[in-house]
Amino acid sequence: MYDAYGHAPIEILLVEDNEGDVRLTREVLKDGRIRNTLNVVCDGVEALAFLRREREYADTKSQDLILLDLNLPKMDGREVLALIKADPELRRIPVVVLTTSSSEVDVLSAYDLHANCYITKPVDLDQFVKVVRSIEDFWLAIVKLPREG
Image (cartoon, rainbow, N blue to C red; front, top):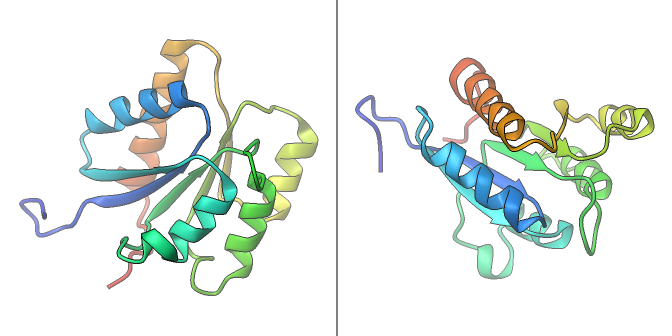
């Protein structure tokens, strides 16, 4: 499905194990100005399978943006980030680390692994909504994403 300008929706992969954060992110992006498709997986192993189009994800579209939590089950976000940025097929996809950690060690580690930006999730509901809207405003409306095709 394309918009009036012939553009397909922006494909976003949210890698998040907190159902409340998933629900809130989905609501904010659904009501946003930029057409998007939010795909969600809840652990690092599924994230890589999704991105590599393995198993049940064989028919998924390539992703334009990844929102990645660091603290994930099965494989944490640091490992996922390292594997994404080491993969020639995936490394161009911008990765926004969106996590509860404000640790300087985590921030530096994420940037060392080539995260495109690091955002600490606010605890406050209104602030969380503002953060997600800011991500939409910047990454979906301003930035030119490296889209496939």
